[in-house]
Image 1: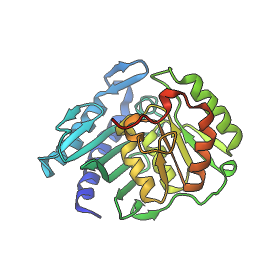
Image 2 (image 1 turned 60 degrees about the vertical axis):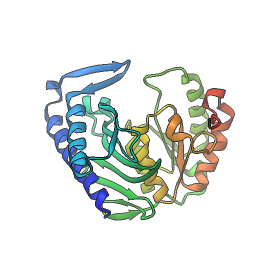
Image 3 (image 1 turned 90 degrees about the horizontal axis):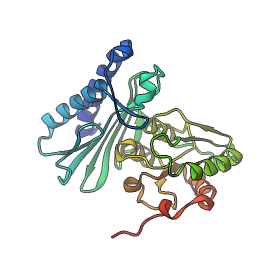
Length: 270
């Protein structure tokens, strides 16, 4: 394992311990509402502090982009992108589907990724150019060639409903053209499942960098493709993401294309 990735795993496991302890008495937690249907608990904050503490001790010159702590030296050459608890709503309801997502971007390129499921003790890791792994075992995207035989992950709009009608039209077509749709509620884990071949593809509108950075690198290192709704590379900035094995990815783009509004199309680089 790459030395930098080893420290990221250490940080993820420390956060996982905090989350697992808190899951024993969720009712005692203090909960704040950031925006409509977007919650943060003291566990999110404590887990993110633990992650940053581990990584900052190891790499004092690195920057951080965290869901809870915001920006810190994000103009640095090395920036950690962190979601300490992806699936907070699931966590608050005792639904055991949430994860920790940690990615390192070096000079604008994703190079290290960890997605950790503290419930199942599943550790997904990737280093650019070295493949993707689940608990130290190499993983690959699925080899299904037809969308009609594929199981696809997604995420429903829950904060911003401006694209809800568009999403529902996409969903309707995807239901008709695939073998099944699943919405577990943690985008980072959904993307990791694509990398492991459990999902054949995934799409969602308007995610944040910390939701998708680590999972995207996992997919790429597992032989899959990640793009925006037109197959371009603006997904990291727009948060509009499509991912899958190469054949299913192309068919997903074709299925989604008729529903793209101007705001969901790739914006030209400035």
